[in-house]
Length: 87
Image (cartoon, rainbow, N blue to C red):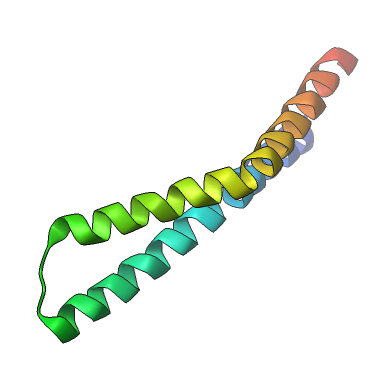
């Protein structure tokens, strides 16, 4: 394996990690901002409110997109194993 191939494999790995973690992180962050705005307006400063809602959002994202995430990860792993077998 040359340096270009290693760079390509690492680039694909980073891209897969961004694709898998991105939706969960972005939605969790959006919920956190909305909860922070709600807490600032109503002056309710309960820490568990934000945590529970973020947890629910993360669970919903995993339930809805979990099969896609797993298939993406399996495709990447399969391509890595094919690459190792060919060299």
